[in-house]
Picture 1 (cartoon, rainbow, N blue to C red):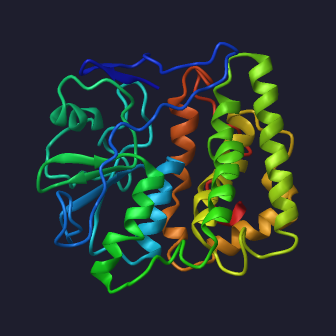
Picture 2: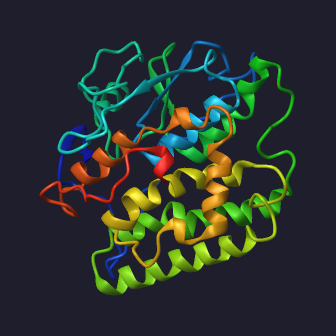
Length: 314
């Protein structure tokens, strides 16, 4: 997928891989936090910050969901990158909905990273929270960005407490988030990017064990932690949306499709029916990214005939 090394882009540079061939996700390097209005270096201000996202990416999808669900469209801008990220990474090329509103004229996202640090080494990822005022990267860790959207930024909309975490037990939320991340959010990548049969079998086994566990949970409650959707549900949805069209075929997560889990399938559509959620999903971006960017998995760019481009078919 490529990365920067000492400020130079390498299309075939890769991150760490375990000795057994297992995929290791690198840490996000930018971990600054937005503070309440009037406090700190990166204060919550309307119009100051830009979310750089890809409709293709599940981690960026989290941030798009929160921006929409929390009515932050007039508070935080959004820039959209092209879905095909090989060979030169995420970029602002010609494609539907692509736009660069960062205030910096660049063609590639990695140029924003070297604008901040011309010797940067690491992955260039979305979502990236960009500060237009100081022309720097605030944060590129999705789990932290969504907490900021549901925290300091919401003070600008009159919200006094978190909508996504305040109604659930924090220990239960952490346990659920950890299970979903390990088995599904990152689990599908550990399956798809495995470089040995041993690593693949271990990862795909955990993935379907996790799906089985969640299917059982959803036989007893409409959402993961009760009667209302919370952070854990919105962290899971981007993976579910991509499962049948992409992960089943492309990442060889093909023991079952999501629609073979009746409770999970109904649950996904329950979330999809929430106002504004469908507007955050562009399956043309999703499919083109995975099938046309991962040249080591799919070198000829073949898109299976069973892949859906319509949310109604999920």
